[in-house]
Image (tube, rainbow, N blue to C red; front, side, top):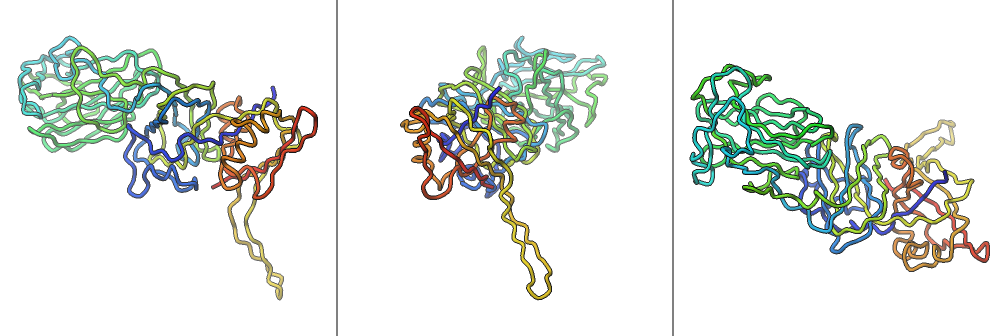
Length: 449
């Protein structure tokens, strides 16, 4: 099958700072770096997950997005969503999020002795969780259905010592993998963790509560995700022990949010506070930084105002140079045979004229492609949008485009073969009319590092 090349030259995210959900960025390496034209000037995000949410101002057609100059790692996953409503606001997918007496919460070898304990807001809506005398894990839990596969979520709960000085916050994903962290309720110190909890935080709140939270993936599979809060006898890997009635913990305000930050607690009763990104277009790929630092997705054109990229399972920290998204200009007929590709080596090699000794100074080695489209239509050359002339006018020799060698290729090959950089040299770069119905135009693509 012939390749379907394309140019993303109107980057709809240019000049925008991600809104809403976003992981913490290192000092001096914030989201403003996504608007630096040099991809090597990268935003840095702490942790293994991140969310970039863009408000385009109005519904815009998009069929391509990319992450340029990244270090996501071979196990990372990336997903893009488009929606007509803002999905960046905090959410809470749990029901009756601090009414633990409600049937939405399972009681496993525990009872809720009191639901009128003093809470962090000086109310009386916190609950005492009392273990029974059985041998087993002692915890409350809630299952959550309808979550999209592989999205990043943040789980949190306020927990306080009453008698027991250790507790565990746990999340079980769709693959039936448990992610957890233990916490010392006397000191706030973190203990053992298991699975892959990310960005674990413990904050001391009012009335002696600790708010424990971490990020994790929903993953995929046949399981139903679940949040658990365990009483523990100590900092143990196993949560199983012989319970002693009266050895209690106090809990308040559990939250399951489509974010990587710990947002302000949002209480719920009979209805969850659901994010808008539950619906709308979605596509996902497995990412890898082995392909020139690029991750490129191409899909059917979708019009949406709000676009959100979720990254999960990445290397800590995450570095991202650029995050362009927009509509590909894809000529109906691909480039001609005879296209060339290789490296533009800017190294210097000099020779001592007296001794003949040679000295080399290594320079950047930029990827480069030389190719010609030999059968462009009049519209593809002269059109007001999605044309060679529009690309010359909008970007020109001073700007950059994303060239996708084959938008129908596998994500591995698409990411490997794509180039972000200049598409022409300074000066005249003209289309030649080679036939009454067709024009030809050559391009010189050079990677910007």
